[in-house]
Amino acid sequence: MAVTKEEKLSESRSTSEDSAPPDGGWGWMIVAGCFLSTICIRAVTRCISMFFMEFQLHFDTDYSTTAWIHSLIDCTTMLCAPLGGFLGSRLSCRATVILGGLLASVGMVISAFASSLEYLYISMGIFTGSGIGTFILAPVVHLLIEYYTWRGALLILGGFVSNLCVCGALMKPLKGRAEGQLKEKVTNKEQGCMTAVPEQVPANSGPVEPNQPEINKLKDTQQLLITNKMLKHIGLGKDKLETSTSKEFGFLLMPDFLILSVSILFLAYGCSAPVVYLVPYALSVGVDHQHAALLMSIFGVSGIVGNITFGWLTDRKCLKRFRLLSYMVAIGLEGLCCMFVPLLQSFSLLLPFSVLYGYFDGAYVALIPVVTSDVMGSTYLTSGLGVVYFLHAIPYLISPPIGGWLVDRTGDYSATFFLSGACFMCSSVVLVVMILFRHYRKSKCKSSVHFSLSQVDAAAQQGII
Image: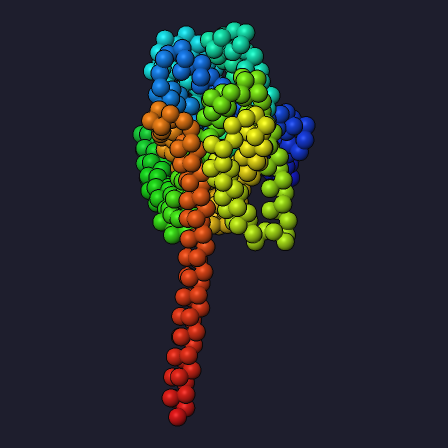
């Protein structure tokens, strides 16, 4: 039965209307779900440093051994980022977030029954490893530890993190998109079958009784043609996949990206240890537990302000060409803050450190996607960001234990904060090298172009002569 043009047009309109992304409405519920997911994940992992002294006293271990808990959480988070993207594309955002929420919640709950640090390495480091809400949770976590001990606090946080499942349930897929794709696939297959085996029936013939051998032969021919076509498509798909993969990750050997990768490795090492050891250091210089928790709260608030203000400032037309410079300044000043920490031995002196360090920490986090885009271009931005965040994993893993080892060896926190500050400075210096390399490359290109033009002029003059 023939399908008219009007029916096809109305069908395509209804499909496009169904699969169009919603502007507002339930879209705001998805935004709320993402916001709450950020609180559940980043804020809780940031507040793990509040448990540092409790774990150390309860299990009677040194700093470097205890620090592995926090480093495993951050490292697992970064290592699992590509896996989360893969599951999100294969399953759905809803299923992936719910699965992550279940794993994180189970990790928190079973951590409350830990009998050793090795147990916590697996339960908290591996299961939970997945800061907008840091300023809310830091004082709350302190009160939970005070009233219910660290075991009760972990149980309550496990219940809190289970709200990720609710956030994931809000992210329902768009209606009609999956159905439209399925209909399109079925229609294409039907059309392929119809064109693969044409019917050869005389125009003036009446109804013909088909015999069984001809039907079987027709079926065999049809299956052979379809199989042949599928094999061709598979071959083409493989070639396309290889080409797209090479294009997608073609930036990995770019000199600018290699230099940026080295800078990111230094940066990731520097930014991990200060967050882990801020509260223990404050307690070691005589700051009480409530004020130490308040330092983490101020750090979280300053991070939000840094995110917003630096993102807004670098988006101005007059400052867009200075975004890389702004990123370098933020990293350098963050390193400078770390180097001054050993001189700050009271709450009133540590307060400005939390403000400034949190502000510049939020600033560089906001600028990482922008700088990545400026270095390698918007074509590779998605894949490039995935690799950049993946590069954080190894420094996140080794930075807190090395900082703890330095505390155990030296007896104070000076070497740990100095090393973090030096890594921030090195990260900024590496980017300076990248800028100088760019200028050298541009000047070399200009000189080669000028030399080739002069050769052409000389050849032209000789020809004229």
